[in-house]
Length: 286
DNA sequence: CCCCAGGTCAGAC
DNA sequence: GTCTGACATGGG
Image (cartoon, rainbow, N blue to C red; front, top):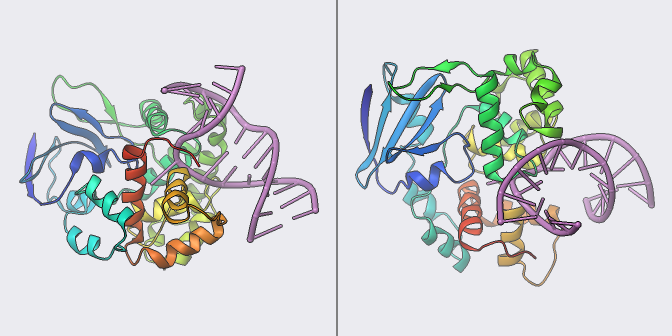
């Protein structure tokens, strides 16, 4: 077992790993376990920072610093948020909530599977997919078996029926279709990171099963485009309830509001609003 | 039995 | 541009 300690302040590890941006983190032994790439990983948070444990020699830990976005100055990010009572409440209710920077393919595939599913169910589908079609990774003695996330090439080679067996329903042809486009190099996920936000979004929108919302999730959670602003039912609820309680703006109008109102780190603001609505405001509808 | 879930798509005005 | 229903599956 290889261990490393990262000194970091204002990092709410549990809330971050459990805030609907990643779907493979499980609480265990006072910490959190998952797989990043081909590596099993355990993270243990404390007031001083985060301890990481892996089985394979990490060479250096840059990949994890990047994944956890440890070098982000959260105070500076929060300072750019609009100073309104709702944002203040959202910040206060989940101090230290962060954005991760995940693998683009895993993030893309996970969010293709997310449509009209609750987060618990997305986690179930992803776990089933990994158990059935991922590759085993090394885990500690006595630990159960764990698989990596299956590659696009692997999924492209599966039949739609095999994918439906993982309980993903009508999302199966979307996932397969997107995996095929990647396997055939009709899109290069690595190249997307070097594009402008608009071009990157347009590229992702070419994939089947990827609309504006899922594209923005991938842009924000995997590519680090901090101006991407995914609007799902929860964020839509937040915008309507908090910012437009009387009027009833169209989704397109609301989207334009978000582009100007929340500033250069609007993606962060979005995550705070999402987490706030989901955990603190109950399921009031409007 | 009902309604809803980190939506997308095709087809209709 | 906006609205509608279909699409699987499971939670509450």
